[in-house]
Image (tube, rainbow, N blue to C red):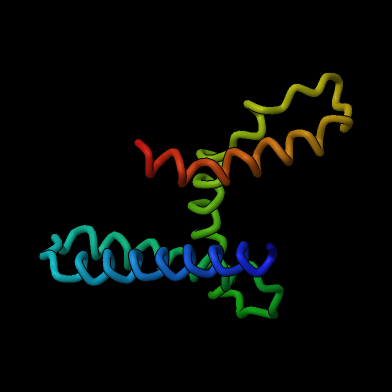
Length: 119
């Protein structure tokens, strides 16, 4: 019985991989506007800068100043997408519902791609 389940799981994964590769190849053949490509490159660069700034190295003062100027951008994006305050139902600062809040957030993040696909 388990071998049948494993077979079907592997079959589904292979089908999903084939569909993803096919959609990627089909999407690569379509002419895209350069504006979206530049935005993706810029966002990727900002993510790398923010990731590099998070390492606790002894950076020169010029580099630290640059990281501090870009850090405000990253803080704005995390505050825009933060739903903790919306989901938080604690009163008087009690932490009894912290785990519940964590799981609610993880479920929402897990369902978000599915809802985007359906919509």
